[in-house]
Length: 258
Image (cartoon, rainbow, N blue to C red):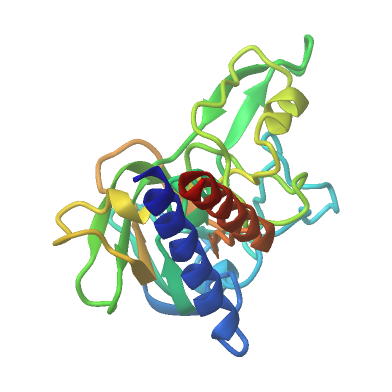
């Protein structure tokens, strides 16, 4: 049973990677804006939805690296939703539902401009957070959407450029209050932060969704703050992960035969 489970998981990852690589010009980032509508009290001038396409900014307009304590803030980097506002994007390929053993089960990332507040007059440790949570929904066809339970955009985690790319997930439960920002980012273990979306958490889907291609973020009217969006990314499993899982499955098989 253990062998079959591991082999099935490895095969699922292999299929996901194959689908991703088969797309001729596939980008791990959002490729098009399908719909956009600003709501009440959106930040003036922050109304260009195309800023969310492609890779999120790695540096701000002053060339400082984006980090968990220094978020993008220019109108050329951020779109403001406003109460009741929303943005819907599409990827140019299916975003696969990763197994729980791969990238912590995270399938896609949503980047906002949330950040951790620090004691800049003291030791620089984190003393609070600036979050403006928004609802995340996913869809296969751009028509029927399913809300993701327990995950909101523009909240945990603030994203960082320190990972070197924006396609790897962050472990759950990274503590941050009272800690140094650099230590917190080190605990991301190569992840870049952002809202960690697991397609398996889709509410109301009949069965488990194997993939999605559309994402909608909505700033729910009456909640706290005006949510902002910076970008979207497909979480891409490392090819080495697939090889390791297949090798492990083969070893279990060999032991079973013996």
